[in-house]
Length: 191
Image (cartoon, rainbow, N blue to C red; front, side):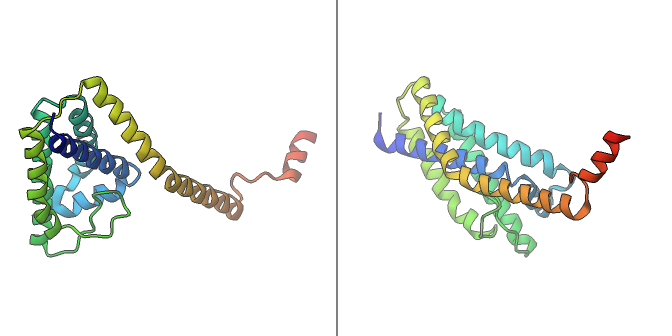
């Protein structure tokens, strides 16, 4: 087993896993990017397919280390990323990149084109020197990756949940909907 090939395969899996995990809570933002790129009504299903495909690619890279087709998925995604960058450039519109969730500060365009050779080199290195771990070892590695990313992403999710709860409480208080009225409750029980 080659250290370089194994490292490339692990890094590819990590990038795809993290990307898919960060797109889930930012699904609407990612769908909007695809709409701006011209996907129209297919943007929602396409966004779901990309997220599932990225997650599946990460899992397959780790679970089937010697099989070439997970690396072919990387090449297909890399071409898609570059195509999205090229499309954004031809639209001459700043389209915010949601490659890693809604927190992305970059825009689609040149970066995706510049990174295409990097994606291809990593996939090529992993193909030329495929890792030799077993499927069980790869799935254990995937579990470790997911646990690490959950630890990284959980604080932000908790903050978002607290904000949503605060918004819900503020709405209930300002509208009177969902707020307990002790006088009304007493009237109903005395009836």
